[in-house]
Length: 278
Image 1 (spheres, helix red, strand yellow):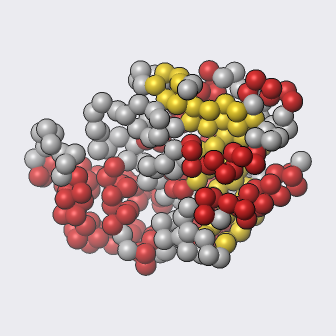
Image 2 (image 1 turned 120 degrees about the vertical axis):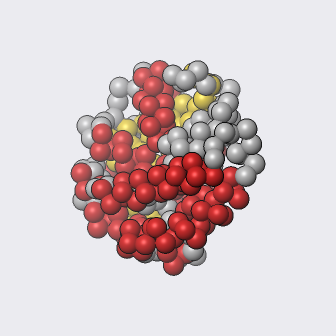
Image 3 (image 1 turned 90 degrees about the vertical axis):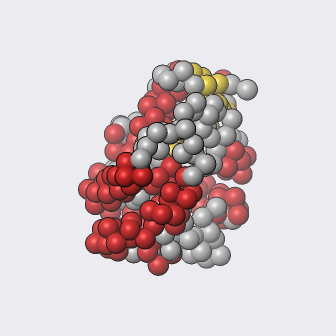
């Protein structure tokens, strides 16, 4: 299995499908998985895309076949490491050509958005699957978000921005319970833990309020699911309003894992979108 060593010395698993015959393909597509997932999540999309394209994917640190971090860092935000590791992987593979990006969920989709904003001349197109405007990029934020009821998620910007202190007062004890096993050996007082959790959630809400995807200039396909409880369709609709040149598709009878559950329609939409660009 192919691995590359990142700047922290960890081995990260990657796939470079058709890399050896890239000149014979119709372009390069990068796949970005979500939190607690892996590149294998895209197996149904890979089956379709590898017939015509070079496909690059990797398992982020602590995910899939990549190394697990030796120490748990509750406040470490994965986005910086994922962005850095992707940049290093593309350099390692000698990628010079422009590429398309397909990102799933709140992490993979947000990383795709950040790359499109940072490297606009490198990105041909962006496809966001069950994504949104929130970055669930560390343990604390992930637990916090998973504890929120659906009615808050569908109105996240309004409800959380105005009531985050009240929400945290009710949720912090449950976050601490969820972290109980991970906290063994960590020398943090209860007050220090409370401050750490509050800092992560307050900064998360601040980042959301400041985030502006309107600078994404590449053609963008946004696919949401009517039954998605994790990244509700309202998030896809909000992205569509803010991203120029975007196309929105909300699928009935589709949840958060639509790329696997509804692979036929998802693949059809992806293929149609890319072909029309060509």
